[in-house]
Length: 76
Image (spheres, rainbow, N blue to C red):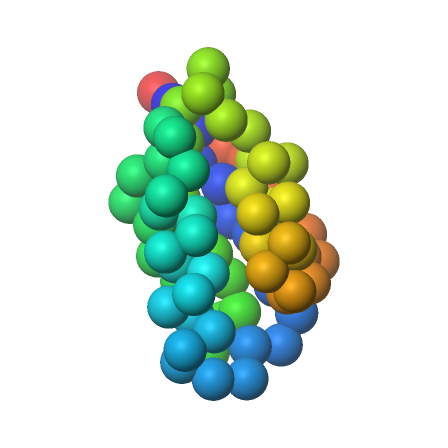
C-alpha cells in the first residue's frame, strides 16, 4: 500500500469536493479518500498492484480539475 497526496488547482465549491471524492473512491484498490477543500488537496491510500498515483491524478483531470503536484509515500 502507498499513500498519495494530490495538490489541486482551485476548488470553487463543495460539490467539486464531493465529485472528486466519489471518482477517486470508485477506483479499484483505493481507500481512505479525503478531499481537503480549503487546502486543495486529495489524500488517499492505494494498492500499487491495482492502480497508480498517476492514474488517480488522471481521474481528477478527466473531471476537469487541475492536478498541480503528486506526492507518493510508501506505507510501512
